[in-house]
Structure formats: structure tokens, C-alpha cells
Length: 224
Image (cartoon, rainbow, N blue to C red; front, side, top):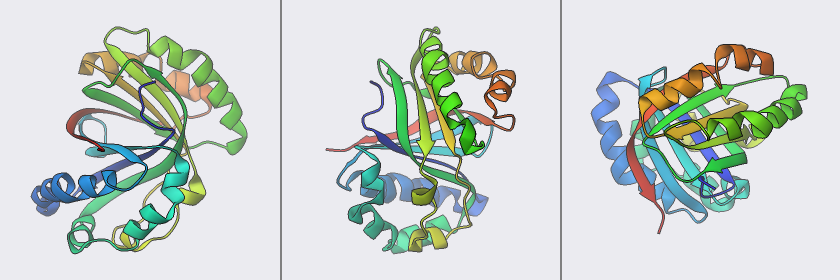
């Protein structure tokens, strides 16, 4: 099992040019350490885009989804630090999903990650999960230089809870499904996204407007 827990937060965002230098300082020195210090948070990672948008992808691993609806996390969201309040004003094009991990396969993490996010009619959920977990993900993990693959489903209610921190930035999208592929090289991720998770494959799944991105790891913090 590659992911450390049964829940994740998946966040994509751009940053204004004037906020970028501050973003790195705040995210590395305060924000990710603060989040990973919350009980039940296990790990936080940030990536930068090599292809696709937005520019940044952040992934938090938690013990289970109840951590994301619990008092400790909500208290932090409703009591943002002054630095956080200033920093999130520079977020643009944000997508944020609080998810259950439906399946995670692999031996470990990779320095590169491919993300696929999409919405669909809820009536398609069962078919998507059966197809992806039954054949697509197992086949992906057999590909050269691929270390892990995951499928996560958003809790739209939990993802849309209004908090003080959320009100400080522009409204965000909530992708219903999140597919993640980790690997050793950008080329390995490109191969998977062009074949196993190509637009044609995703169209057959009922996700013709899925968004692809390839990201490289910038920062990684594991909880104590």
C-alpha cells in the first residue's frame, strides 16, 4: 500500500506572480508543518507542474476521512494564521477535494506524479470504480518505472464546507474523482497518461472533460 492512510486532500492551485516568493516560504515553513501536526495527518507533499495546469499540486495523506471533518482540522481552518490569510489571497484557479482512498497500489512513492481529475454523473460512480480498480490501476502499476497508482473519490459535502480560510481565497472547484500515478521519470508518467488514462479511455469511462497534469516533487514532510 503506497498511500499512508484511507483519506487524502488533493489541492491544485496557481499563485499570482507577486505572491510566489512568499508562497514557498509560507507553505514550507508554516503551512504544511502546521497541517502535518494535526492529529491524524500523516504526510504532506507539494509538486510543481511540468505539463498541465494549475502550477502546483499538494497532497495530504490522513488516517481516514473522519480526520477531515473532525474538530482539530476544522478549528485550524476557522482560525487561520495571519500569514495564511495573506498568502491564500494570492491563490488562483484552485481545485480542492477531500477524498476517500478507494484503492491504492504500489511499492512506494515516486518523484513524479500524474494527476487526472474529473466530474461525472453520480450514477456512473460504480462503473468507474469497478473499471479503474479492477483493471486500469493494476495494469498501470505493471508499467516500467511506475511506483504507485491510486483512485480517490471526493466527499462533496465535506469539501464544500465554508470556513474562514476558504473565504479568504477565491471559490474552488471540487473534482469528484482523482486518479494519481507516481513514478521515477516524467516519461513513465507520460506513457501512462497517453495510454492507460488517455482521453479516449476516460471518455469511455464517462469523463470526457478530465484534466491531466504531470508534476515534480518539491517538498515532502512526514508527521512524527
